[in-house]
Length: 91
Image (tube, rainbow, N blue to C red; front, side, top):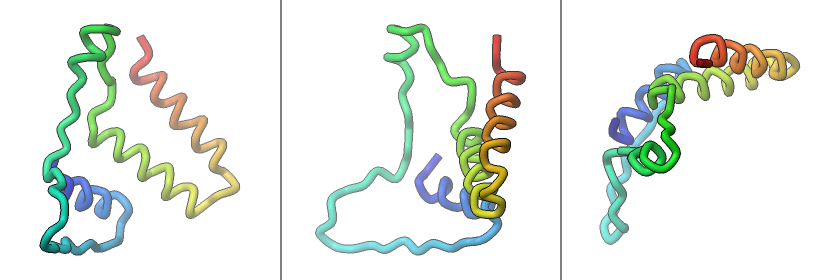
């Protein structure tokens, strides 16, 4: 997933927003592709993530939307997200 695709997806999930790519001379290189490598955690800990990057991003943005819209219920919302995660992924 490119950084730009992640930003576009985040805006879609949030429901609004915009971005601008600023290209400046003499700036350090920044990776255009975010690629996470789990090989070390897999080999040393026998651990791999249950959520995809998109699923993680969706859950995070959903939480922040709820926080901004209904701060008083954020604890319950958080507990529900955790319960849903455990019901879906707990082995």
